[in-house]
Structure formats: C-alpha cells, structure tokens
Length: 152
Ligand SMILES: Nc1ncnc2c1ncn2[C@@H]1O[C@H](COP(=O)(O)OP(=O)(O)O)[C@@H](O)[C@H]1O
Ligand SMILES: [Mg+2]
Image 1 (cartoon, rainbow, N blue to C red):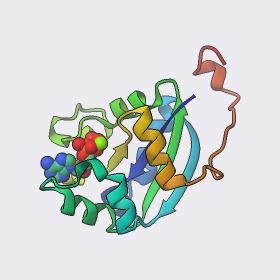
Image 2: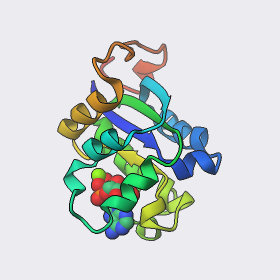
Image 3: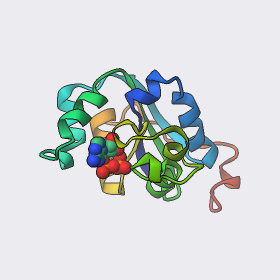
Image 4: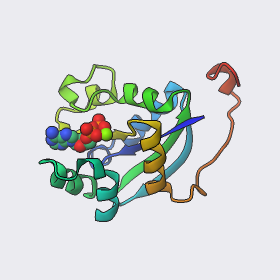
C-alpha cells in the first residue's frame, strides 16, 4: 500500500485546525500508519526541504517550519501521494481549488498549512526523516477497508 508523509505546518498548529486537516485525509479513506508531534530542527528542515536550497524563499521556509511544534503523519492507501496532494490543493492557496485544504484554509504560499510528499520516492525519503527506522509505523487493517479498497 502506497504511503505519503503529511505535515501540519506551524500555522495549522497555531490556528487550531490541525485535527480538522488530518480528518480530511482520514475521511478520504486514507489509513493512518504513523503520527508524531515534534519540533523540527534546523538540520531536519534543511534535509526535508533540500530541493529548495538556494531559492529566495528557502530561509523563510526553514524558519517557518521550525517555528513551533508540528504534527507529522503517515497515511497509506491507493495512490496515497496523489490522493493526499489533491486533497491538499495547489501550493499557492489563492489558486487552490475551493474544497481543498489550502483552498479552504489559506491565502499565502508561505502560510499554506500543510505539506504532502510529491512522489512515492519523496515519500519514502521524507518518512525516513520523520519516522527513522519505521518502528513506530503500523501495518494494520480496518474492518471498513473492503468498502474503501476494492481488493481488500
Ligand atoms: N515562492 C514561494 N514563496 C514562499 N514560500 C514558498 C514559495 N514556493 C514554495 N514555498 C514554500 O515551500 C514549500 C515547498 O514548496 P513546493 O515543494 O514547491 O510546494 P508543495 O508544498 O506544494 O510541494 C511550499 O509549500 C511553501 O510553503
Ligand atoms: Mg513539495
């Protein structure tokens, strides 16, 4: 089952909408495989956002993501990466579709409340950053899974 990494960014935490956001992924049918509350260190932030090193917004992005505790979650399911990205909406909240998380809760690109991996390869890398050896991730089934996953 494909997995993806979701982060509730500091603005989502500060605004008290963290569980409202998480519940959207859960309601979509994605299954929670891991959950942590943590403060991102400078090192973790630079590793996680390594692809953006050198861009003009990089320093602001690192100070944003390290500015308060965040929630890191792993969700799994059919095409979990794409499912989560469509639930999140586009990077720039004013251009994100209404009904998506960013389209409903955000206005600015530097305050877009949620992170989701952009490919299965990124997901594997990012889950490693936030969940290490994976010993706190759970491989489990829900009684309802056969009503969400056709082949379960
Ligand atoms: N031009 C920008 N100005 C400020 N912040 C930005 C800008 N582009 C991206 N960011 C921030 O960096 C994060 C990572 O960028 P990117 O990987 O392109 O988007 P996404 O989070 O949708 O995958 C964005 O979610 C946003 O918080
Ligand atoms: Mg990205």
